[in-house]
Image 1 (tube, rainbow, N blue to C red):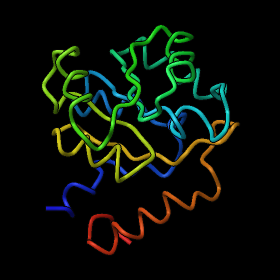
Image 2 (image 1 turned 90 degrees about the vertical axis):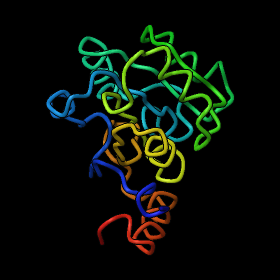
Image 3 (image 1 turned 135 degrees about the vertical axis):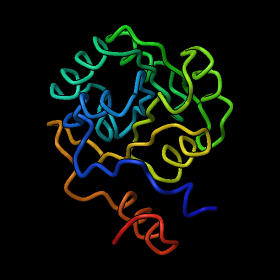
Image 4 (image 1 turned 135 degrees about the horizontal axis):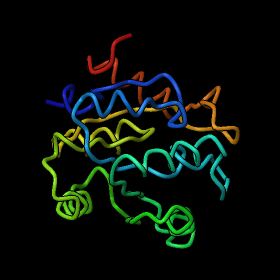
Length: 169
């Protein structure tokens, strides 16, 4: 049902830079698949905020990570991945499942032990839920690593999800 597919397992009211890793570990999460644009990189920025980079380094020490982006730019996404020494996928086509299936195959973990973290309901949460992953919706990140004060696209998606009963009001 659409309502279930658009319901994140964890609706985090802040950016990825403030996502408590220990809470994911406590929930049995053993790997992370991370969106890039607006989750790790602010809009129109090519470098990660310091807070996000610190978070990413800490997360990389605790579990396997994979960057999964709909962005076709291997240069943009690859630069982030190479800086952090992470595997990545561009042109993922989320919410289609093909790219995520390959990532899960490479991680060799059951879907319930993998979290997909992103800022979009209709791509990140939808594909994660379709594949049985633990889904985390974060606020888009600003250049300081804080949540964007105003994000029209995410707000629109949340209003639509509330309309179908996916996200509490």
